[in-house]
Image (cartoon, rainbow, N blue to C red; front, side):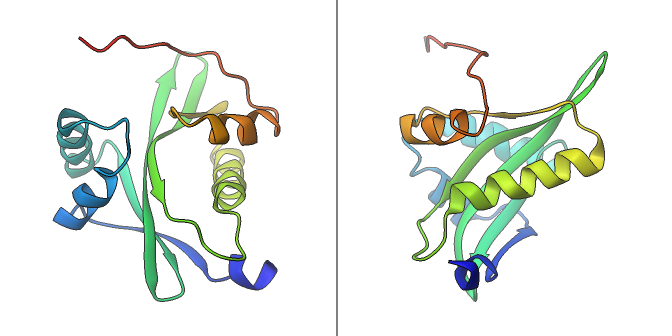
Length: 137
């Protein structure tokens, strides 16, 4: 697994039609969500990273910061990453965001998800589920 993990890169990217198409495959994102993400990335409020494995793009991550009176949080707004044989993509994201959060002095990392498997993986690493339930109208 160490060899595969070493080939994974997260690189800042520009929004493209491909970005929208790939993120659109996420079961919980709507066209409205995608339009908001695109606008906020274009405005520099959210950050888009392409995730590559070797020479192949395997996904996208959109993240932002949320400023509070006592500091700021890193927020993973959306992540759509294909599995990579020999690598644990959740572990890779976890490791990189933990490192970035500590280096920047963030008070927390928040992650939006509807995926039970991701929730289980993150709670096994100490995450707590405490933010919100949503009723879409």
